[in-house]
Image 1 (cartoon, rainbow, N blue to C red):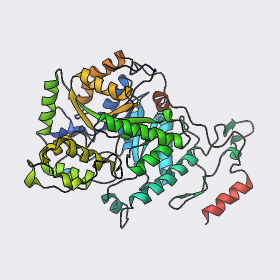
Image 2 (image 1 turned 90 degrees about the vertical axis):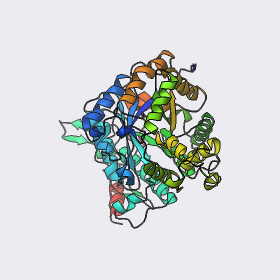
Image 3 (image 1 turned 60 degrees about the vertical axis):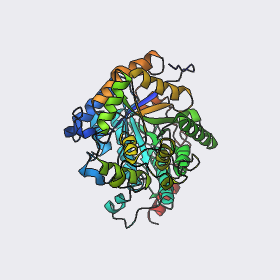
Image 4 (image 1 turned 120 degrees about the horizontal axis):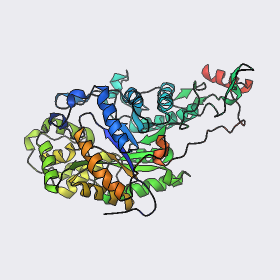
Length: 467
């Protein structure tokens, strides 16, 4: 058992993957794949997570159909609209959606997340991704998928302009002066007037600052480019690690990078993924994991391996050891250009698995840590990473839904609460409250900036728009 004596509290998110995070979850009788396009399914999960005071629920997303659709329930709903539906049936839990800076328009996405934050009373979070799937480009009329450097350069401009839009209105811009007939003071509303290499937005936003100032900014890349981007912008970081030592190295590196940008490192939460198989005994939990692994389809697992790492293996050698040479030096912790490749290479180097064994290792959570054990053992793992400089909390990734989360909520959460590591009830109303983050100040000091009422500012915006 581990305790944290600093007063820190774990952040816990429920990462919802339709039938569960194990790739064979949809085949298991304890899952509900027939409900993955049913909005009430996600509302029920969110309500359960809210009952145990989770910080947030989280949806990943990609604007492309996974080619493994033949073998897995990989279709999914659009997350922002789904979370808007969930918001109407919950009160406190945070709502984090993934959206791509590569394929969205900045003004439209700013409106979507601002609206979600307003409608939910300050519970929205944006998981910022640049989209790695090359298939996505064709869905948006592009001849080729932008390279990594281009995607991250666009992402930096994209986030900058969204922050300008969300801060467009000063907090006291709305006057509501019925007597004088003045609704708002245009001197306190500012044009974005942003012209970058990849993004151009001229005008002011069409809504005031949302309850959180702006939605919480989340980032999920651990490559060199992803780390630099996260250190500059992110308020929470989702990441994948297999070993405590690797998680500690990542944690220390990110915190140092954050400080180098002049930011408060404690205001950036690092949240690895954990996918727990829970049993009344360790043997029972291991048997449950084996039961799911035996339902996997090798053809799908090989496609996932290729997607994660670029490594091509065939079904004719499933019971032969994975050739170590195909991963070269990718397992070196200094090689972060493809973060998930590094995770997989590390597994191969340390464990020398067969191809089938590697597919089973990845089937649970695509490179995130899978743990099979009793509730106490799961809580011990979480506590160790939390107290040993590896995590500020976790993305809980149930291998199957809804039962996998039910087991965590009913049996693991009470242990964490008894150890003083997780709250027993909410103490705030917004996602920022849950994460211990402050509402950011607007970029324009009250009464100190030029707004759209000023001829000079209006002319500049008009000139920009016509450029």
